[in-house]
Structure formats: structure tokens, C-alpha cells
Length: 457
Image (cartoon, rainbow, N blue to C red):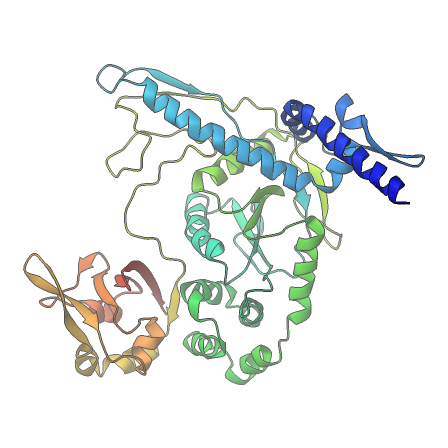
């Protein structure tokens, strides 16, 4: 028996070594399996049908193996694409002479790999945006995920760029190591049944680091939700079953981490930039305009989640003629129009983006501002000076309901309110809260910038 086992081990070892010799063909095989396919059946090449193992009289082909790991293979293709586009950006920059190449045209033909198209059910899911929108973005996220939190700004950019074309559908995929993510998902669905999902959803992202029942009740109070019904819904986890079904769907599709965003079913894994989404959204809109048979409906009512491979064969190259030297770095001064190719993005450096938005009741706020004089006393001059005046630090606010509701913390240094500086000679926080419906606060917290937004209703 030991000799037989030893023989099998040697055979596997040789098989692995022989497989390594064919590594140069992996890229071509993997790429073909994701591009040369129809919307109804997976077309394969000769190599994918080749037998790579036998078990008794049963044969296993590469296609058999690839079928079970399609998303992982696509993630590898995307990683290769990211490496190529980063190298391309460097090469373009190195091959342009800022003093002589002002009018040189740049033709970019690099395109991302075509994503798998996943079909999921939207019945009963929280949703925002026009029901008639041609593009559905199915978002699998987790309220405690840092990456999901950072994506909220990108999703908001998409809403503003495509106000009539996008419908968002939200799926809960809390990971086990995030203890409060499931309860936050349940609380958001409790707000959904009171027609306040979006406001509550944004507020959870704004307070991502303090997800607990006290926060849920405080937010429900600001949104004027029915107190007893909401409290019971949160305490008894009324939506635990629906959340577990979302988790089951994500796992059946092969998702591991969050965020995962499906653009009309097209699979985009992990954080992606605005321009990456723009690339695929524009392709889907063009397909819809042309009536392309390759644009599949990304949802099926009452069906199990399934996977197809989308096929887009358009020429996705772009020619750009620059009137300025091309800079492949983030810069507020760079005004060059960038082609909408996934990845080659230019995000200007500026104020850190807000993750979400805290709802504030106007009635509650008016009651609080009666005590404005007392509230102002919590602002104390910090040791730092800007142009001869001290910036202001918050102190003794741990048990203050006003500052806790705003999400402000002990020691926060408030720098700007609605784009106006705050310092010892000027503090417009209270005036803006009293007069405006939308208020933005930028501050430093333990050496890091934080951006808070408030929607006053």
C-alpha cells in the first residue's frame, strides 16, 4: 500500500511539473474562455476541451475545472489588465516630451476583459432609482466593510452622472468577522418598511465605526420612524431570514469578499473607480440603444442565481489629441479630457470624500440651537495656528447629545463648514445648521481627515 501511495504522489508531482511547462498558454486559454462565447452557451476552444486528468474511466477537461472557478479566473484576468494599464500609463508618460508633444494624438486600444454576466433575483430587495432605468446596479456589500464605505462616494457620483439611467438594488453580504454588520443590515430593512431606506442607508455609512442599537434608535428618531415598531423590528431581527438568503445567493455565485457590483449583471469585483463603472455603463447603454442581443436582463424574478458570459465585441479604442502636456498623476491643475477607458483614471486630490450622510430633524435641531451659547463653549482654541488664528478643537462632548448626534468626537478639530474656514474668529457651524438644508463639515480626527455631511429635513 505504501508503494502504491508513493507511486501516486510521484505521479502527481510529475503532473504538476508538466503542467508548469504549459504555463505560457494559461493566459490565452483563460482569455478565450471569457471572450469567445455566446449569451446562452459557453463556447470553448480545443485546449479547454482537452483532458487534463482521468479518474478511472472518467475524464476531466479544463472546461470542467474552469466552470467551477470562472469568477476567480476572471479576477486573474482583471489583475493582469490592471498591471498592463499601469505600465501603459508609465510608458505614455515616458514617451511624451512636455515641451514638444502638445499636439501628439494618443490612441488607447487597451480594453478590460469582458466580465461574466450573473443573473440575480431583485424581488424583495431594497432598491433606489427609477424603476424604468435601463441599467441595474446590483450591489453586494457589508456595512462594516471599509472598502464598501469608500465606494459610497463613487456610487453617489454615478447617481449624479446618470440620474435617469441607473437603478440600484442592494444585497446584504455581512462577513462573519464583522459582528455588527448583520444587525445594521436588519436595521436598514426595518427603515425600508417605513419608506426611509435610502436616508437610513446613507446614515449607516456615515457612522460606520459605531454600528449599534443606540445609533439605530437615534437615527430612527431623526427620521421620525414609528418608535415602538422600529425598536421591535431591530430587537427581534425581523429580517434575519432575508439577510441569510442574500448571503446564500452571494455564496452560490462564488463571491468571497465585498464589494461586488453587477452592472446589468456584468461582474465587477472589489472597489472600482468612477471611470471603470462609466466604461461598462456606457457600453450597456450603447447596447440598449442598438438593441444588441448581447445585453442580457440582469435579473430574473423568482429564479436561482445563475451565470452567463457576456460578449461585447465593440471597438473600445479612443484617440485623444492633447492641447496640454499629458500628466499621468493626480492633479487639480490637470484639465485634460480623459477617455472613458476602465482604469486610466485621474482623480484630483482634494477634500476627503464623505462616506454617507446623517439625517437631522429640523424640529430637533431648532430645539438644540436654543442653547447655542452653551454649545459654542465646547469649541476651544487648539495649539495650531493658520495665518495667525487658532483652529478650534471640541472638548467635553462625550455625553452631549447634540454633538453625538452629529457624529462629532472628543478632540475633533473642525476646519471647514460648507467650504468656509472655522477658527477662533469665525465659527459658522451653528448658522449653517440653522439656515441650510445640506451642511458639510471637514475636520481632523486623530491626525486623519474626516468629511461629514448632514441632510436637514
